[in-house]
Image (cartoon, rainbow over the protein chains, first blue to last red):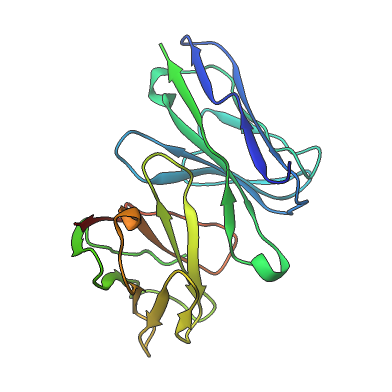
Amino acid sequence: DAGITQSPRYKITETGRQVTLMCHQTWSHSYMFWYRQDLGHGLRLIYYSAAADITDKGEVPDGYVVSRSKTENFPLTLESATRSQTSVYFCASLGQGVSAGELFFGEGSRLTVL
Amino acid sequence: DAKTTQPPSMDCAEGRAANLPCNHSTISGNEYVYWYRQIHSQGPQYIIHGLKNNETNEMASLIITEDRKSSTLILPHATLRDTAVYYCIVSGTYKYIFGTGTRLKVLA
């Protein structure tokens, strides 16, 4: 199916564990983004990527690692999860052509760190 | 990227126009104004964007002042399904920063 998908949708982990959230898009969009949204708050940009092997920090990158070996995938890794990283994580890709300027979001990954 | 200021919340009667303001007084010449909305805990949904001219699509209209320091998103006939958090974003790069948005409640 065309679109942007995130996995897992729900994850519970413990402090100190490594967690990877996956994001996959089928449009071959160049730009991809990771945001986090804490309960009752707006979205904050963690990292973004302009193309394969090109990534850049957003507003709140500390504690996160990203990679982009293929255009369609943009995984987000929490190397040592902390309770403050409990949040909903949204992945997005940026439209091109007639959809230029439009961010397409995934359904979100709800992460709980105990 | 320029910072935006939006009222935290607004109410609108169903069937009436909802006018959501956004202040972006530090906007620079190459920065666009984007509007998104988020319904419940879903991923944000694109609504509209513009540079300096007013824009209209099937969802909404975007009015940008001549000096570009503020804009208004207009939902012409609000319905209960328009209840959401609306985000105004200004960006001239590919770094899209969401603020806290305006929580719009459409009342029956």
